[in-house]
Amino acid sequence: MTSLLHRSAIVPLLFAGFAAVPFVATAIEQPFWISFFARILIYAIAASALNLALGYGGLVSFGHALFMGLGSYAVALPAFHGIASGWVHLALCIIASSLIALGVGAISLRTSGMAFIMITLAFAQMGYFLLVSLKQYGGDDGLPVAATSQFGSVDLGSTRPLYATALVVLALVTWWMAKLRAAPFGMALRGARQNARRINAIGLEARRLRLVAFVISGAICGMSGLLLANLNAFASPSSLAWTVSGELIVMVVLGGIGTVAGPVIGALVFLGLEEVLKGLTEHWMVIFGPLIVVMALVGRRGIVGLIDLWPRAPRAAAPAVLSEGGA
Amino acid sequence: MSSLQTEGLVKRYGALLVTDHVSLDIRAGELHAVIGPNGAGKTTLINQLSGELPADEGRIVFDGQDISALPVHQRARAGLLRSYQITSIFEEFSVTENAVLAALAAKRSAWRFWAPMLGDVVAREAAAAALTAAGLATHADALAGELAYGQRRQLELAMALTAQPKFLLLDEPMAGMSVQESAAVTTLLRGLKGRYTILLVEHDMDAVFALADRISVLVYGSVMFTGTPDEIRAHSEVRAVYLGEETA
Image 1 (tube, each protein chain N blue to C red):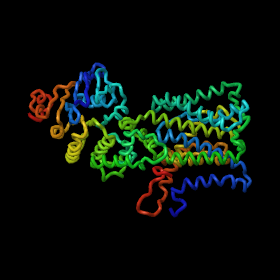
Image 2: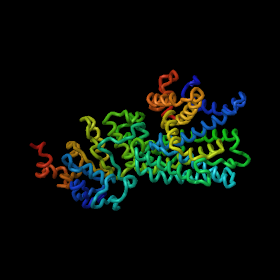
Image 3: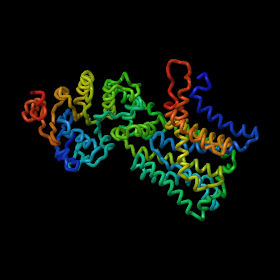
Image 4: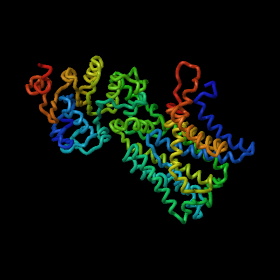
């Protein structure tokens, strides 16, 4: 543990860095950085939520943008009708995304593999077109958030409280995901991914484990949508677009599927690279695409998998690898 | 007292009758072997007993309760545990993690979302006991996916044992094992005998005749004869159909 570059230090370093962002941004007078990193934190929450279903559960959901969108509209719709209470927004967000996840999961989990991917995509598209058709709420132009979420005296509409909230939520989610990974439910869920037949044979029910994971995943993803709507002061059907679901999957895979730190690193690298490359050239996709392909080819466990290859602390016994341990 | 009974169990694949009105009566505490040539429908029979295949006709009664309509996990909770012919373990987990997960599942306490699974002392003790019984205690920390073939079979058994079953369905536990490995499993099963009711499907005739209290001979999906090992040896039709090669 002497070296700061040792992998067990990755998550604390990452969060220390996130915590420093507002202060650094203020010091160098680049307030844009705060909202940019807030976006990274929000996508990291969504990617961590997806990782519960995708990485732990092996459920390739191609429709998680649906839950981000639900979370966004759980702010925009009440606000449109003059309700600014953050508690109402939060309750609506959690209830709506859990219930929809329950329905979508109950139906989708009757299938597996390619059919599961297509059904989750289809549900997200249904949500997309439903919101586009709601002309009184802006239709495909989207809906400006008339009143951002007020939690007592805290207004998520201003950047700093939002940033702090997103950071705390991400920290709690990451902590829980680390605990959950080794807890009985997480082990059973990961076991069901490896061998569903055996999970049933020892007296558990693979489908029920997956459904619960899908609902938790959907609810957390919904919270990221709530934060996003406050950050942008805008909710749009485009946040439910299938490309968003795809980006979330890329973040998880890029960072390290099934690992705790992976989705956070994935969101940071994905959005960071996008921003940097956009500054370099208009045709940033030409560089970005191949980079993602290379990353997917190089490491089975993405960037976290590469960090695992990092020279270990000089000792005989190999410490638990990041992808397996609690980090 | 009978532990598990089947009454007129039938399974068809199209026109093919794979299980042909099988009626078995397995007494509590006995080790009952099912033998028969390849394609006789032994694994199909086990799959119907464990609940992985629905039977087309007939009833399965376990501990006096009709379980014909119960899904796999509910039969497992009722104490009907199985091992697989093709090894079925959690390859990315350690041997201990495999066994502890099985122990927790049996206690129905897998729905916990915070404290680490390996911190559950009771489940760890149950797992350790089962691993010792299965002869795997020395490999407790190994990754299941890196075990040798015979050891994987031992882990299968250990996982069924951690659940503290009433009834074990063992589908060819010695398939593909070396002579030494299958001798070790025979010793292990002899130790389990009497403590659990066991239905054993096995091709290794030495093991079957050494272990079984009673043997049922399955031919073309139907039970041709049920009897003690001595009766089976003496039965001319069984010898002709199945043991013929050995006596010729």
